[in-house]
Image: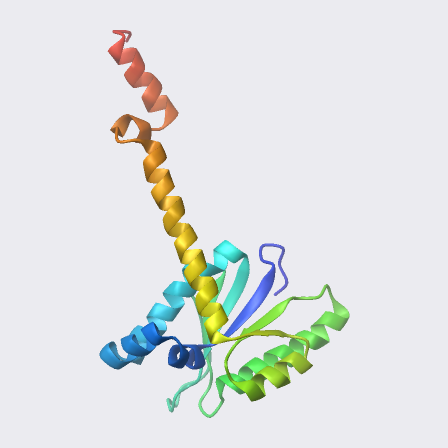
Length: 183
């Protein structure tokens, strides 16, 4: 689990975040829980590599009689669906407890839990995890999304309005030669 490719492990209490972010609430109310989950996952897929976090979103089984499973979206983002009768809180607390034990044996892992659940925040901080509120995560995700949009805009502007600037250097050189009449 430890890797130099990320600086922290972010555990997200999925339904807690969906219930806290107004845009996800609206999405859930209009299009259903699956659409809200997909929006949350998409937001964190864009966010995680920008901040070098390995992110796992934890969703309760939500009355489904299914076994637990992990769904990998990218090398940095996955979703864990708990088994029937296991809550996301329980899974996150067990994960933090196991991480505390691992810290004593190996290089420490910076563990961050995103939730508004006050009781869970107290438990996981007891295991050495950091906690952030859903509002803080929403703000961080929005700031990161803004930075991504700015990078895209500046990349478009710097490429100019000519197709020539979008070509790789070899193609540009070949076009220059053709313009000068060289074969």
